Amino acid sequence: MGQASVIVVGNEKGGAGKSTIAIHIATALLHGGAKVAVLDLDLRQQTLNRFFANRKAWLAANGAEAPMPAEHEISGAGDALAKAPDADQLARFEAAFAEVADKADFVLIDTPGSDTAISRAAHGLADLIVTPMNDSFVDFDMLGVVDPVTLELKRHSLYSETVWNSRKARATATRKQIDWVVLRNRLAPTEARNRKRLDERVEALSRKVGFRLGPGLRDRVIYRELFPFGLTVADLSPTIRPVAMSLQHVAARQELRALMGALGFTGLDESEKIAAE
Image (cartoon, rainbow, N blue to C red; front, side):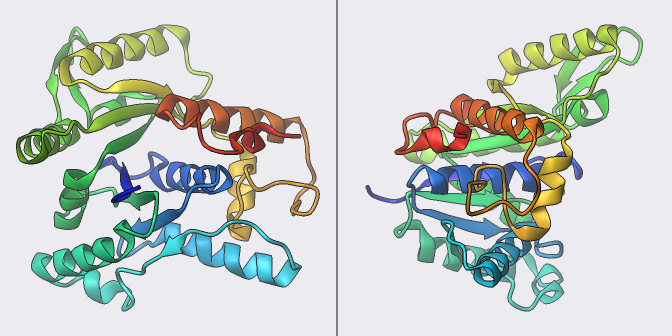
C-alpha cells in the first residue's frame, strides 16, 4: 500500500480513556497482521510510549513473543519539548510522522487531553478520528452544549469545533473525508433516565456534526492490571498469561472485538485471534 492510514485518538478532556483505547487498537491491529507505527503526542505523560516500553521489557524477561509496533519518540528530552515553542514541537512531529508514514499500514497517534498545536496538526492528517467519552454529561460537554434548564442540545462545543475544522481543511486540500467515531467508553450502571437523556443528546449531536457511534471498553480491572506488563487481552495465550484467566477476560475480548468491528477493522488477517480461546 502507499502511505499509511492515520488513526488519531483524540478528545480535549482528560480521563476519557484515550490511551487505553489507543493501546488496544494498536495491539489488535498488530495481532491482525498489520504493520503499525505509534506516535505519542502527550509530551509530558507519555502513557503510550511507556506501555510499549513495559511490553518490550516483559516479553524479554519472560522469553515470550508478541508483535511490536514501530515506535518513534517525538520527545526524547521529556518535558523539554513540552515547554518548547509550537514551531519546534510541530517540526519534531512532522519529522517523526514522515519517518514512519511510508513504513506502516497504520500510524496510530495518541493525543493529549488539551488543545495543542501538534494535536491539531495530527487531526488534520487523520483518516479516522476515534473519540472516547465517558458515560456522563461531564464528558459530553466537550462535544456539545445543552440547555441547563431543558437539557436540549443547543450547539456543538470545543472539541467538535476542532474536528469540524480539520475535516473542512482536509476536504478542501485533498477531497478526502475524515471518518469520525465517538466511542461510549467506560459504561457504568447509571440511572436509566439519565442514560436515556444522554443517549438522545449524543445521537442528536451525531446527526448535527457527522460522527458515528461505537462501543468502547467498560471499566474493567483486567484492562488496568495488564498495563504494567505492556499487555492487553489481545495478547493473552497459553504462553502469555501474567494473571489468572477468568470469564472477565473472555468478556473483555468480546468488547475489543466489537470495538474493532465498529471501527471497520474486521477484515484483517487472523483477526479472530482477538476473540480466541
